[in-house]
Every structure is written in structure tokens, then in C-alpha cells.
Image 1 (cartoon, rainbow, N blue to C red):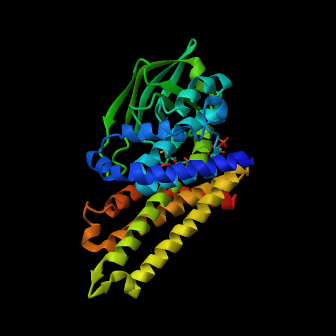
Image 2: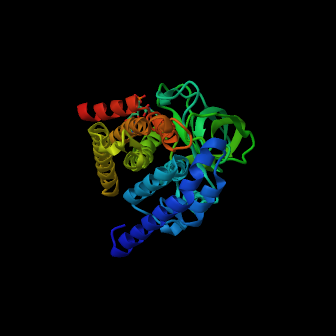
Image 3: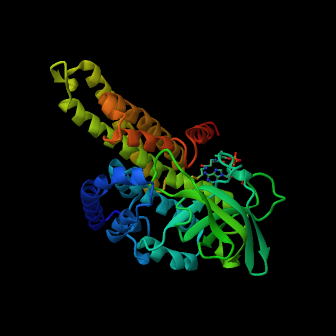
Length: 381
Ligand code: COS
């Protein structure tokens, strides 16, 4: 993505996304939050405008956009509605294991419909007893002839029950300790023995469907193995290194959205005979918020540049961006609620939703404590 045509194409994509985010996404955000229903209209909007195709190569009908462009798009969408921003982030999360480890046949089979937004993707790593300790999974896959039979339960899975393409991590060698003996599989939603379990009721990103994937003697062809047996944990970690910036971009968008609302409100809200923005106490809060948002943005874009340049040790920066962007999103949205005072606490204004949406960014795709582990290990090795 370095030619002048590509640069121009990406600028046009961002212009389109900004317009769509303001005109089509923002007006739906409160309703998506209130109903907690998956926004199929937003999914269609992104699909029709080629946005879900951004991470996929042109040969599969995608755009093959740079990571920086993908992140800017997630940021713009999340500024208007974090649930809609997540649609693109999870399409990338669920597809990246196939991009990293899939065979040409597997890519050919799944990418065209994923790029078109006809199919959604999901990433099935977490289990009830295996969150931060991702290697402690219990789901197993037993080789039987030219099939694998999967048994187990994945939970807290974004797009559970909606995704056609589910990447599932399972133990193929149960005698192997810890993270060893784990393999990655593609499980299509219509495989026998595969079903949606419980659907969660969440604090934020309420339109995104989060739930359990249940596998009971679920039979898949052996050809659905990704890479080789035993490579699953590495594929999972390499995927998260690449996708954590997507969470960072979502958090950054939420933070910028809350800052914009707070600035506008502070200029309009009159107390003691003048706009509250004329009080230095409010000005200092806004100045800190804007500085934190900008610092977070520069860290995230730097991580994206490293990914786009193929730098070997980008994982540390990816973790830093995820951690910092989500931490400042939590702080900035909280401050925005404070600046709006009683109105900030009401659903009439968007900042309380933004505060709830920001929280998950400190938790998913690895808690911010795990990000610190990743950063420290890289520093100290
Ligand atoms: N890229 C490639 N390989 C990696 C890797 C990475 N980023 N991180 C670890 N590995 C490899 C290691 O090199 C090691 O390989 P060998 O067995 O060949 O030596 C193997 O994976 C195990 O690594 P490690 O010993 O570091 O594993 P741990 O059990 O200590 O776990 C953390 C490491 C905590 C970093 C990992 O479990 C993790 O990221 N947990 C959070 C999971 C998460 O984000 N969950 C959210 C679900 S998705 S919404």
C-alpha cells in the first residue's frame, strides 16, 4: 500500500467513513445501546461501502488497506458508536488466524465472503476457566480418520451465533503441558454439534452479541486445521499482537467522541452568568483530556506504522497502544461525564454510554494487566 493510487484510495475511504459515521452511525448509537440488538443495518452499511473488506487482499475482493487505515476507520466509527467500530475490528480478529496460518485453499474458501461482509467472523479462544491464562483451555479436538471431533465450550465470544467462520482453539494433545498441544481450527456455524449457548447481557458495547459457543461431538474435516497441529497457541498470540491495536483504535475513537461532546457542552452551558468553559477548572480538565487523547493517538499510529513496515518487535507497541488508549478512554469519558454534570449521567447525552463502552477496552483481547506482562517480558528478555 505505498503507491500514490493507494494513498489516494485510502484518503477517499476515510472521507467516506467520516461522512457515514456522522450521518448514519451516530444517529443510531443510542438506540443500539438501548435495545442491545445486533445492528444488522450497520453491518450492511459497512459491507455495502467495502469497509469490512479493508483487511482483505484485493485478490479476494477486499481492499488490502494498510493497518494505519484500518485503525483510523475503526477510530472514526467508534467516535460515533463503539459497537459499530467493533464490527470491523472483529472481522479482522476472526480472520487474522487464517491470514497468518491459512492455506491458499482456506483463504480462497473464506475470504471473498468475509471481505464482502456476507459472512461474519469470530475468534474462539476464551473459556470459563481460561481467560488471561489462555493456555489452560479444556476444549479438545480428537483426530478421527480425516476429521476432527471437537468437544468443549468457548465463552465471551464476540459475534457468537452470528459468525459463519469461527476460529476455534482446542487441545489436540491433552498430555502436552500448558500452552503446548493446542491447535487452531476453522469451524463453520453449520457444522453438526456446533451451537450458540448463553448470550450475555453487558454493561457496554450492548449491540455487539457476546455469547457461548458449544461444541458437542462437533465434526469438521481435517482440512479445517489451521497450520499444523500444536501451532495453535502461537497463532493465537500472533493474532492478538496484530489485533490489539484495533481495540486501541476503538478506545481512542470513544475518547475523542467524549472529548468533542465535553468541549461543545462546556461552551454552551451557562452557570453563574457565563459558559462553564470560562472557568479555569474546566479548561484544565479539557486541556488534559485533549493531550491524553493526542498522546494515545500518536502511540497507536506508531504501532500501526511498525506493523505496516513489517517490524519484528511490534508486539510491545501493540500492547502499549491497547493499554494506554483504553486507560485514557476510561479517564476521558469519566471526565466528560463530570463536565456535563447531572446531564452527563443521563441517557439523553451520549457520554454515559461512552464511559460504559470504554470499560471493555481495558479488559478484552487481554486485560491491561496482561498487556503490562507482554510489555515487561519484551523489555526484560
Ligand atoms: N507470538 C508468538 N509466539 C508467542 C507469543 C507471541 N506474541 N507469545 C508467546 N508465544 C509463544 C512462546 O514463545 C512460547 O513458545 P514455546 O512453547 O515454543 O517456548 C509459547 O507461546 C508459550 O508462551 P508463554 O510461556 O509466554 O505463555 P504463557 O502461558 O506464560 O502466556 C500470555 C503468555 C500471558 C502473554 C498469554 O497467555 C496471553 O496473552 N494471555 C491473554 C490472552 C488474551 O488476550 N485473551 C483475550 C481473549 S481474546 S478476546
